Length: 179
Image 1 (cartoon, rainbow, N blue to C red):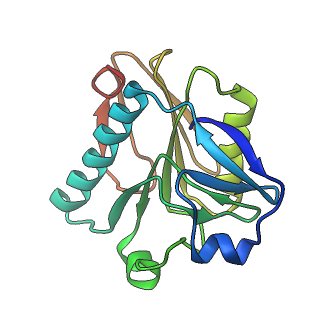
Image 2: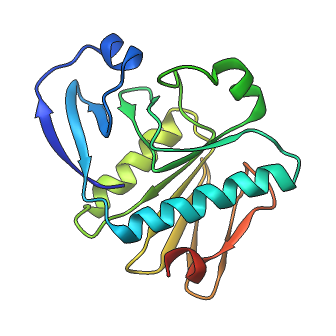
C-alpha cells in the first residue's frame, strides 16, 4: 500500500472500469494516485508475487498472481499491491481490464507514510467485499498480518508467514520477504 494523492474530484465508475488509468484507484468517487512506492516496496512486491506464482504452479492449485491490477470492492476500485485469483475466477473474469469483484487473496505493502488506521480500514473493506484473505506487510517493522473473516495472525522476524484459506500450504520467511 502506498500513500494516495487526490488527482480529480470525479470520475465515472464505468469509465474507470473500462479504461483504468495507470497507478490510480477510484476512492469515494475521486481519482486517487497511489504514490510512495520505494525500491524496498517494489522488491517485496516482486518477491511475494513471484512466490505466489511459483507456489500455485508447483502445488497444482492453479490460478494467477497479479501486481497492481484494478479490482472492484463493494465501494470502490482498488489496486492491491499483489493479488491472487483462483482458477475458477480466472476462467470467469481473467480478461477484463478491471476485475469486477475483489481478488481471493490480496496483499498490501505498507509504506512509512501510510496511516495504520487507513491500512486496516482498507483490509476491512477487502474482507467485507468477500476477499477471503488479506496480507498486510509492514517492511520497517518486519511484521506481516494475515487477516481472514474471523482471525488476524501476526508473523514477526524469524517466523514463516503462511496462508490460511487461499493457496493452502504456502509460506514464506518474513525476513526473506522484508530484507
